[in-house]
Length: 445
Image (tube, rainbow, N blue to C red; front, top):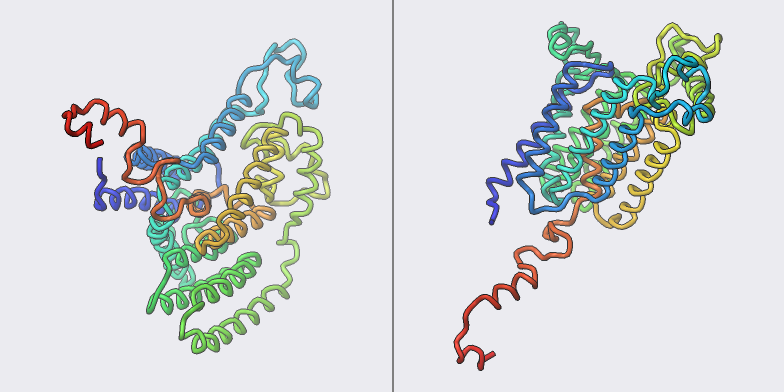
């Protein structure tokens, strides 16, 4: 069966619109949002459609392994186990009262673990669907990511103009602070990393100027957003984008002075931002990390179950570390995953990081792979001080760049070990054996 370019374009359109929907409606950080459930259903439906439609293309083996490992760990966490098995591996306060029951689960809340497991597996399914496309096709899908960035910039412009945005909060089900995001730090990281998708489209001619203007616009919005992590990441991404866009362009010499002026103004704003004193508004994330580490030392063999952090954290919180704001996350996704996943979750995390590094080492000669790796690295670094991957918008962005990193080169085989358009040797032999030949043909052979 030969798939036409129009049908392939429709498949890209379907999955691209799903990714775009996540970016403009998936900025909430609260647990159990209706909008997140709707987006999860959309991602599962569209990803399944892509996987079934492109059945003759292979999916990422690493993605399948990750899906199986996390699904297995999640099932074990909610499986009833004899209390005797867990007594020596878990602190007594987290065990059922003596004689009350004979079985218990590793997860402290099976409902929360199931919900968190669905959220995680949904993004892996999206990654598997995106892995069906090659590097050039993912470059075309990058347009949807850029469109999402532009929509969020437009929404944040409306916010800066002091316009009434209550209608948007009513629609999304959460209070959108900037763009479609509930957290200004998440918004800043999203637009800074999302702009890298413009570089995957290999801009030429006037598109170079357009991309540079877009980068400058992002810089200004990041400075206005006020996120310290965001402005630092934005500066790094902008310098990187200028180098990649202007490389090989005759207009680089003309554009350089203009970018220098923008960078100087940006650095001045950055200095002003970092010299501001916010007093008690700065919550010490070092305390979060140390308290989470205390919990890990007690819970590391089994973990506490996905999405159960805020059940465990208060028991280890010291009185002097209690803030007015409720600590719902560790503000370090690595520590939070180790606490919730235990030793098995730690091994899965280490395997994922190793797979990313090994893959980049193999394809580092590609421009798109370098861009994808930098985007992934920025999100992972930011995950050490926040929880950006807990939002559908940034999680879908991470899945896109991960698929771009693991994508096959354009024109390579979609099925391992098989050239495009060439039937397998065994099939050719079977057809030849079943085809009647005349005596003259046999002599000629």
